[in-house]
Amino acid sequence: MVYKGDAMTNENNPKTIRVRWRGQEIMFVTGICFLSIAGYVWNAYTLTSQSMQDNYVIPYRNNHLSFNYNKNVLVPQIISVLLLYGWYIFINKAIVPFKQKISVQKSGLFLLKNTAWLLIQLIIISCLLALCINTTTYYAHPYFFNYSGFQLLALFGYNDNPLTNLFVGVDRALLLTGVYAVYVYMRGFIINYIQKPDNKNVYRVLVTNQVTGVMFIYLSVFWITQYYNLVHEANFFVTYFSLITPVLLISLSNIYWLFPLAEEKTPIFSQQFFLRLLASTFVYSLLFFFFPATTWHPLIFVLYWAAQLFIVTPVSWLIYQQRKDKILQLRRMEKALIRSKADIQFIRSQINPHFLFNTLNTLYGVALQDGSSRAAEGIQKLGDMMRFMLHENNIDFIPLRREIEYLGNYIALQKLRIQSSPNITIETNINDNGCNYNIAPMMLIPLVENAFKHGISLIETSWIKINLACDENNIRFEVRNSMHTKQDGDTEQASSGIGVNNIVERLKHIYPGKHQIFFNGDGKEFLAQLSIHL
Image (tube, rainbow, N blue to C red):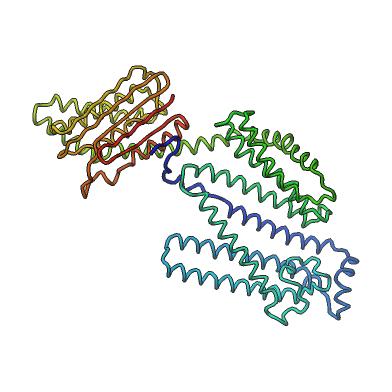
């Protein structure tokens, strides 16, 4: 098993960091609802008498109906918005708690019952929505003027005989509910994936919140432009989609992916950077093919692509430069959280209560046998180890000689515990010549601790061989130990592998691409090899 910069995931990051997609969406929909109602009220107060006669009074009079603007226009318009808003809120409140319930209890009967109840609720709310829309249509009579001003009612079908058939619009209401329910479920699935407890949780959540915020602003601009007729263009939707969307996608991709990646791994203006830039801008620019041009020529697309490269990319670079410190800080914070957590878990697994209990018992037995000199020596070594963990282990990098000194104290204490057994051999070949550089603390000890934990048996022949060598740029560390069948009730089994997993995790983030760790066991001997390029 070889690890080259890859590592296992750790526990999840702080629970206070959450994706705000749902909250941002609710604010977006609430804002649209408020602006829609405000627009209807504004139209009511700015409508001239001549416009009212032409658009409403005459159609009602021709059909032998009395007309009142508030009763037949303003109130139905406002109610149609509130109906859809209430429907929206209900579906979010029904499906999200349902997903939370099934995540806690996953029994088949529980899932079946709750799924059935959820479907019944969605069917009921769809039928009620259609019925209320029918009632609103009855007072509005929007079919007299081709549903002008009542586009929301038109979503449920053109109904020129409201309330004569209570099921008119139910099919569309059910379809609308089903589509949105699937979206809500998929949104929850995506949010759970983004918040998945792994090493990139923090940065991924924070970037998602930035991107979803920008996307809702993008949708708000489009909706306001359309709703208030700020642009009189028949193909405005397609034009907006094909021209603005690629610009937005390229900017987000550059700011949150390409430029940070280049800052950390690939130098700016390198060949790899330009290949990624060309590929991403080309893919996003393909949306330009939806542009409603009367005549098409490949040169038009090339010019648009060039605009993405030479206009949008430099502008996004300037924006990134303004926000670079914050973006990179988020990435560094993510790594710091991971390292801190790995260090804490490492300390817990390194010097556990079981080891301390055995060591103190050993020191007590030595003191009874031959006085206090050997006991004092053991206590001093243990004190040096505890001092190392409390002070130097909190520093990012320490002299390698201090790490080797800690390693020597640990081995000496273990030898005190097992020296009475003639079947145990401990060989150390630690050559610290050339080890004149710094290293992340507690980087070597997990492999040795793992060897003593799983390679020593007081009733079987056991051995441990430790080798360390340095040159100008590399550390090479090797630990071999005998392997034994675990006995039932072994107190060390529960913590097996924690220290090794943590060193793999820390190597990935402290020495990315500059380390190699290798494990191999054949049932008789276990081998661990670590090399770090400094």
